[in-house]
Image 1: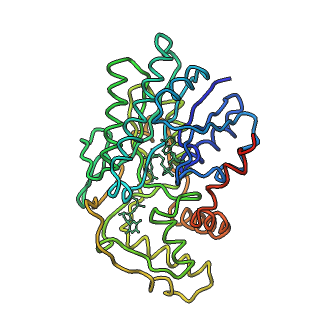
Image 2: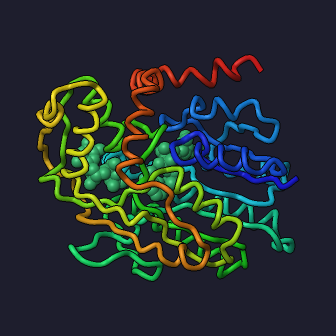
Image 3: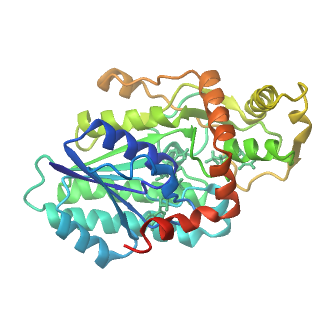
Length: 350
Ligand code: NAD
Ligand code: TYD
């Protein structure tokens, strides 16, 4: 039985990766290590909880001693590292937290893997999940490739860039079997409603203003979260050590155009007059350091490992809206903070 550590598995993308691995690989024991910050929600994994090849570990990647002891005890065969502070706006108000979690936390994991795997690196893998935001911003033309220079502009992207550098440095210096992917913006079920799409779905539901930063002309390249999870599966199993893969769906949207589509779908689903939700659009002061455009060239991943996204955006956005409307309890629990009691209720008396 292979032992795989997934960090940040209670978060948005992590929960989809945990579900995929637990269901697909009955011969793997999946350990989900998560601190359960505001972004971690075990309700995301209710269906996975009873499976015998799944185990939750409450813990903090910034706790060096705890991480080393965990690696010593469990002797993991592989690590898929997603735990991070992930929201750009929060990084602008509290950059230090991003340095500690994203940089030091990653280095702690690297040190533990290096110590435990020393001389036994064969067949091991340290897979670091990163973002396209490390590449900075594009103008109106061009795409990020795996050789685009790093040029981060927000404290979030600077902390992710730094962690990527450490991962590569550990590969080069210590021969640690590392691999990295950089993905574009994800959307789909279970995303914390601070990010654009779930925030706006929730605000439309309650007829609250939709705060569009600046003129709404910034462009993001959106990928359905389950497609990111399948890409992670393919890269984890078939990518070569030392490689980097960009992941994206060739699906660029100007924010304001995407918001209009979202408003239209929400009007249809809620049985509102066409145009009702668009009236909620409110232009607000732009985000500081706001990158103009992200767009990913994922042709290497498609060519070398045969991955491609399964969903068209129109289908993905409808699926996403349907999920949030069908799971209003989840959304209400997250916005009210009630989800924070889930761990206590579930594990408190064990
Ligand atoms: P998220 O904020 O939804 O989840 C992060 C998870 O990490 C949470 O469960 C949180 O509790 C956990 N965590 C935070 N600090 C921790 C710590 N010190 N110790 C242990 N666990 C901790 O994030 P997400 O959107 O799911 O992103 C996951 C990863 O993917 C991140 O590394 C992010 O940089 C990367 N990424 C995200 C996107 C995106 O669009 N969301 C795109 C590309 C890459
Ligand atoms: P976000 O979901 O925060 O992802 P990222 O900043 O990592 O790309 O934001 C996506 C885009 O939407 C980004 O250009 C900022 C913009 N945005 C708004 O206009 N209003 C908002 O309230 C939020 C959260 C984001």
